Image 1 (cartoon, rainbow, N blue to C red):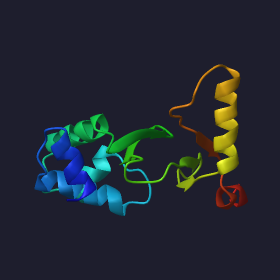
Image 2: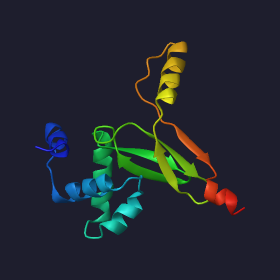
Image 3: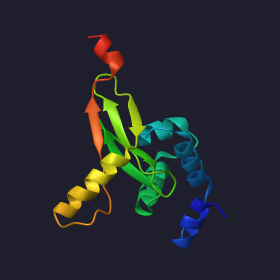
Length: 136
């Protein structure tokens, strides 16, 4: 049994074709996408079904939502993808993912300094990419 199916079934939900198609799209995308982009890429699936599925997937930890610029985007959660962060160009809106162990260590130390044990975090970086800086 695949992890998606196991996650759904262990929480009392069925593994349906629309859920599988949405998951497959998210799994093939290397960057977060909006719900509108999902609906454009999967026109055979009713928009209400897409939004309900995203909500369910978020509740079960299958997906996470992230702001990139002015857009709320969806990507697979850490059950399916390694932990990472995003850096987005404010001029062209192109986003890249990155991970950095030194950053992870620094965030854990910072949390401990304030008496916390870090359980989760989000780091989103915004700036201007090299290509856009050349065009200015």
